[in-house]
Image 1: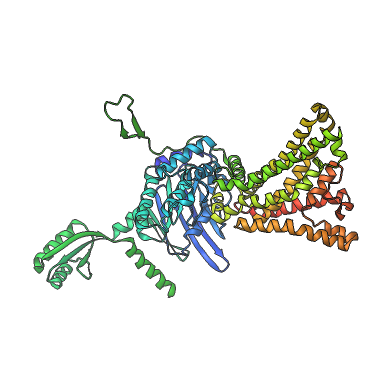
Image 2: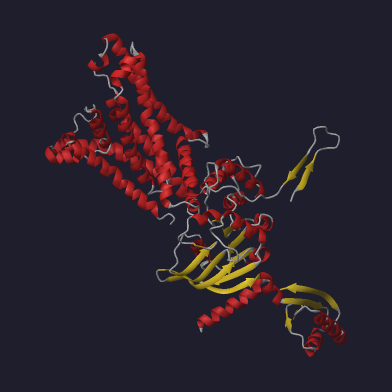
Length: 327
Length: 311
């Protein structure tokens, strides 16, 4: 675990959490809304870092976050946040931040006043709350605009205020529900940068739900994939992408001969529209490609290492899951 | 970690270096739920009085507070003039309204004040979604609604007590011997404080309950104004028409009169507004009980609506 985060949790809320526990822990969690099963026997734990919950709309991401925040009681199973039962602990909410997906901002007050108020509601004394609000607005890039009424802000600025209110009381853990929703590409990039900064510079761990694979892939250290209320995958993002490292090659001619030469050397080749993708990226693969190119007299146009995007991986796994459910 | 982000021009005598010290974790005291409750209370008072908002947000609450105080001032000027012309006790002999009459006369204005201002403390939180942020803060639903209720009650108390204070200061100031006036009339102070509090608690609770059912402030205001303004002549006329015990009980549903009956009991005299009210004949116990029913039951409904806001 990130030592800075752990130290901060211990220093400020020593009675809430002991060393070595995960920040969030869900065990055999099931949530049913009538006949609809939103979460089905899901278990995972989250430690320090940026963790992404990925899933389509209705996969159970928001339900999981609401249970972790104590807003919804699970049908069965348990959810613990900073070592405490999420359903019963009011005090633990002072150490957790939450950025909802939907609108949650007043229009008539300034960002500075709103963040000061939310910091006070989280238990900070008024003078500290004012200082923290100004600092937080500076960190999210709204310092110059802090005295303007929120109603006049752009969507991107409102998202920053939403992030700011989640951070203003210096939580140990912040949960972001679809933080890039409704943003244009530039705004989305800015928000992802802020999310990375939240952990790497502020030392606050992040749980980040999204249905956008690219956002998760670019920002998160770990990933939890939900589909239809079930846990499909979980682990380090790097682990998934490393497994699928490939080399892409493109030649001007003799494609068939090159493919035969590669297969003769035991290389796994996938044909793509403009070239081949070769599994694995160690030195021997490059040696085999070099030898095969010589043998097949294939003029090389392009050769580049390529990490398979998470999208491809989960599309494949999603298809498998759907197939097994259908069977 | 610190990083110099800007430096003064060389040669500048008053130059210095600005450092961005980066993100600073908060390691100071956290005051928990009690601070949260106070913050919501403070925000509620500021919202009700329009502080920290644009100029338009201040117009309505301050119009009513100034108008009610002006009413108290007018009463005191008229009473002072009557005393000057008719000698000591001239105002009383001339039937000039005083402390016991004030809440009866001003009740409609007080209810309209509650109807237009109180919903601003609850409805926008639901409409804008801010309520979802309170739900994840270290406070409970009871903390939220109790703090909001107390915030508007405080504003209502200003609105009900300030005119009486103005009236008292005006009457004692216009007396040839102010200390004599104070000695003779000091009991009116706890009376108008208690009667004002009864009026404020009643109006606050009903107005907040109506506001809890809608995300639109205007809907709650229109409903409340309709309830107070339209129900009064309707029930009064109907109860007079029916007459007898049934008419008396029907008159109990004149919502604007319920706290005024309590006012009459506190002052020990009937005010001008309730003089002809059939319900007056039902007795003090029934009238006070009816008042408590109309404050406690709506209060419990209001609480139950927010109790499960967060566990």
